[in-house]
Image (cartoon, rainbow, N blue to C red; front, top):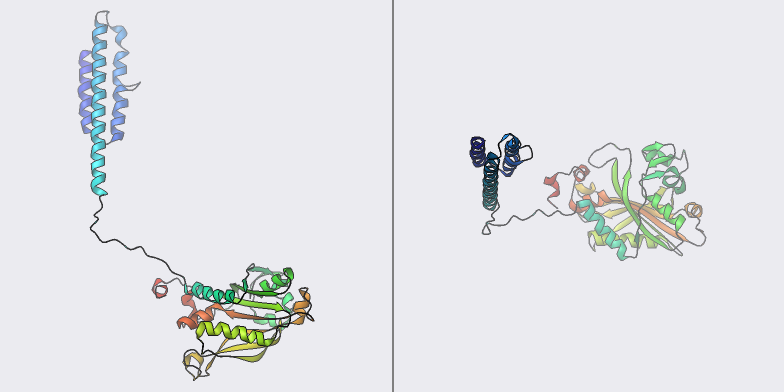
Amino acid sequence: MKEQLSQIEVLAKQQLEEASDAKAVEELRVKFLGKKGEITAILKQMGQLSAEERPVIGQLANKVRADIEEAISERAASIKASEQERLIKEETLDVTMPGKAPKIGRLHPLNKTLEEVEEIFLGMGFEIVEGPEVETDHYCFEALNMPKHHPARDTQDTFYINENVVLRTQTSSVQIRTMENKKPPIRIISPGRVYRSDAVDATHSPLFHQIEGLVIDKGITMADLKGTLELLMKRLYGEETQIRLRPHHFPYTEPSAEVDLMCYNCGGKGCPMCKNEGWIEILGAGMVHPKVLRDCGIDPEEYSGFAFGIGLERITMGNYEIKDMRLLYENDMRFLEQF
């Protein structure tokens, strides 16, 4: 047994020298000193020894155990020190090196334009109101004076979920919800995504953004509408900006108008951007139809109001001279980094 204990000590120290990490050291500890280890196996044979041999072997076994434990502690400490030294070398910072500036994101052109428009209207005392993008037929059409089979529905190219549920084609549905739940005076804008089944090209998309406005109060006239839109356009395009209103027809406004903006590129002289007309069609507007007011519980004999709707993409493309709407949606960093 003396020879066995000596061999175990020599083998343990040899294998500890070869251990490369803390896990290997722990495995060797279990191998030699554990409950089923080699030292324990020797001690289980003590019953076969004579009374004179037992204390001698027991003393030797304890010494071998202590020597192995000390060797394990020394090897574990050595490995830990080496690991710390390696980490210090790898993680050392050279404070003389130039720093790396983090990339800072900025607003998408659409969001930037939307914030600018919202700021203008907030300054005029408007509230910003949002509503669901999946709408009922009632809010998207019928409450806007477009009952089933109305010809105006044919121009909407609507996405139908079922017969009575659609993806909203305009944010006018938010205006209806507001009039049903709030008494005049009302002064809101309702920006948001809208959907129409259009083929994708440079000026059309099945998903785009609208900003619609609504004002309801006593004594509201077309002059208030024109003044509001003029202020908006002057803030967006400069104090020299002019607009004009042309008669039009919308089922939910009466009278209705198409609003043109004097071309900001040529100042009304005519250029390719405005197709040499000097004016750019920018939005639709009009006085809220009495039937729409009445159906929302507002007396048209006491109150009147105006509404308008403008495409966010159209403003953005004009502001930044973007020729293709698809660029706004493709997330091409070469395009977006210009803003």
